[in-house]
Length: 309
Image (cartoon, rainbow, N blue to C red; front, side):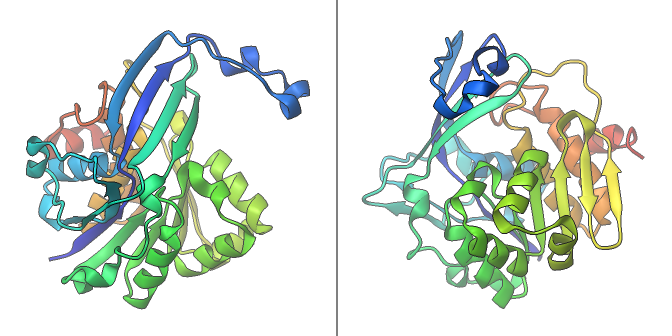
């Protein structure tokens, strides 16, 4: 049976809403001495478990038994009993020193976000290794994302084991220097970023688009309401987003994107069709509030997929 490795963050988070736009308070001519305060209208404290969000959507897609979660938390982390239904926890490391990661998210009127992130236990590297997973030979794809620089270790291990690897750095891209970014691009198979993160990758690495595409099998760029672009040395494909009338909360859309993509690939669908699954799964998530509140069946996915076919 094909397996999926998910190495993502488990964190506690504080989610806030700002009723104006960031640009109302941020003056471009004073960006070098920025000093602003966002007056928040709503605040929620939650367990932000990005790894869980991906695993939960994979469970909805009937891939629970094929998903391996590999990450690290502090001893304060408590696994809610209901989550055992969705997620296999046997490869989660509980560290004795570093706190569980912590995230703060501020979302403004136009759905732009400012995020701060403390990685904490995610920086623990020694106890975590793909080699410690007994059935690692059956892992087909690995999704490696914002969990500190341990992604460098996992990408190298995946390459040694011929595991197709997605590097999805998110907002942590600035942690990597030029040599580390080039090392990642040389060893990973796929890069997943939004437009801004892709610009950062190019700025940090000093590489042109053509040079990046020479190193990667595929570069996948999310365009939010414009859909997704997939680039390679030979193609430039743009898949439109699902048009929705009721966008409730975009915070968890990124997590759902990955679940849809992994589902498509592990079922041997074409890259383009897998990207369409990525967009469709995310469309269900942004219509709901909070993580793991969305519901869909495979038939629901198929019905909504027809819009993109």
